[in-house]
Length: 423
Image 1 (cartoon, rainbow, N blue to C red):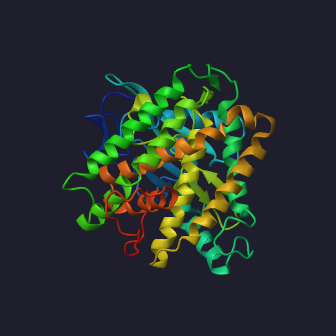
Image 2: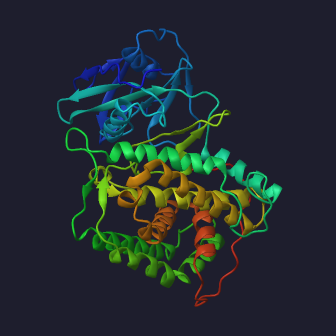
Image 3: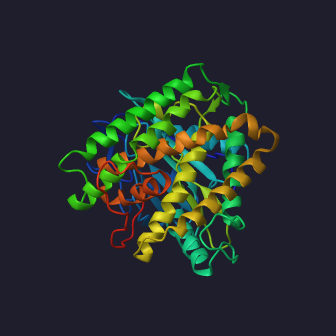
């Protein structure tokens, strides 16, 4: 499949009809026939046909059964049609994926085209992206957990022995994942057209980063004191105590962000965690969902950031994989964090190898501890606001990575009963 955007049809008007489905923007939400777009209503198929007329008029639509901010539908077993859930939600991904497509990037599903919408009130935006469907793939909340548990069962990584330390070889998949992210960053950071590419940050950027992170810490600890914090009051209270006992070490890590020099900033993936990484049975890795962090407003998502933010987010998600794996096991197993540590080490090695001589100028590893602490707090906030049952995962990592002051009585972290989950 070609990696160039081959078609860019545009809809016009405030309520165009596609495949008999009336589209509208209501309070910023994109609705199809008065509801959220969904597989089976024919909309995704018709949007795919506008990009590729070879798609049949009766081509099947299949839902993608994971948590989604937008609506993604598999059409004809060949394309994924991603329909914006809110006005402008796919605009950022359109820009970044087009740059990657123009560069021939093989680390993302091939972009076949996009469907725009000229709205008399909201202006012009992307209604849908049409990309290559990769059959047989699963996201990292499945395959990476499986890999970690397999390594645990064999006592090491890639069949090597080990006993809970970080010694041992880096897993091959982690190295390749690092290379994939490095190649994507190299393209996005490259000086290109329309003012794109890496640019020096303002002098006050590190201080502002610290302030944003400290606000996040204040919000996380404040909301832990609410009566409705957590799906299980007892579990929520225990997690709150563990977090409160680690506020000091977390704040110390966040404070270090202001001590770093300004770096080079460019448009990142913005929400780079293991769930955004597809892998097929042959081992091909593909990065998806370049919409940016769904917890941020649209303007903030467009903000250029240093590469270390994406890197820190991925490293945190590898630790979260260890928490999910312990939930699957049904018991606390701290040695799984050692496997995650090896994966993180491999990821960094692959990332730096892909960037080559540009690695030192693009990646400030000294900012990673602070950014990792910030991302863990963002995971806590996500759980508090949207998905209380996810709280166990950042709780596990915070309890593992940061020493407790023991100011409050606390119980050792244990996983909740196992159930499928994604974030």
